[in-house]
Image (tube, rainbow, N blue to C red; front, side):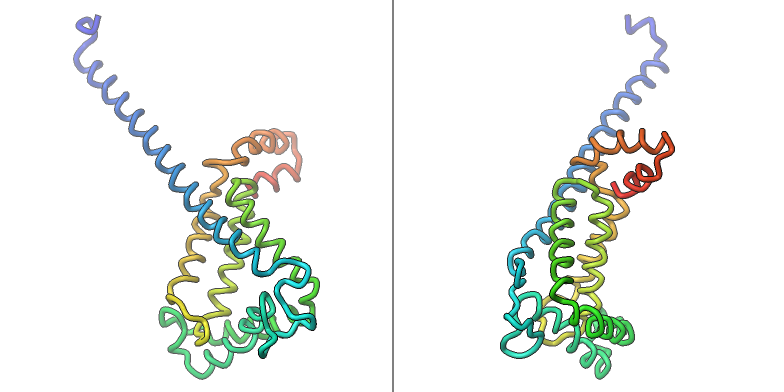
Amino acid sequence: MEESVPAENRERQRSGGVAASSARWERWLRTVVVALASIGIGYLFFSNLWWMLPPNFGCSEDFQFEGENANGLCFWVGTLSGEPRTVLTSNLSSAPLGVPLGWVARANGVFIDGFVEPNIRWLAYVIWGTVAFVSLSLILGLFSRLGALLATVVALELAIGLAGVSSVRGWEWAFPLMLLLSIALFGLAPGRYFGLDRLLRPRLVALRDRGSRVGRLLLALT
């Protein structure tokens, strides 16, 4: 039977089979790599839920941001507020990777001082809920583009707010790499490779095709 098929056609069939096999292997590899990255970042956020549990979020009873009584979420809010501004305005060379972030850190400090600290008793629930949502979103692949976007916002705040802070010991690339990986996951929308978004998207596509604005919005977040 094979002899009746021209040699050129047989070669084309073999090449097509190899290409299809290679494509399957590459799709499988891409899915595994994206899943590992997404679950890894999700677990990073999950592991940070426990030191700032509601209702006090690890803070003292009077929610002190500085001094010996500053603990839990309040300690880190206080660090984002005060120390980055003084360090970066006096010594911009201490900024991570040599990038001068003085004015950005000062603006961030004003935001922390003027909005976050005065409202910490209810904003702490928002912060904790955001971290919880990011962890579940990226681990389960559910509304994963939204989860990656929120992870990007959190990583950006840490990268700017803790830039050049002398009391924070660690590798200077840590927060920038966390930020870059979160941005990559936002672009990839990991739930489209694994997880619950793969089951949810066909239903959202049907909603969008019927003219639903909610369906169009939710589809963009998966």
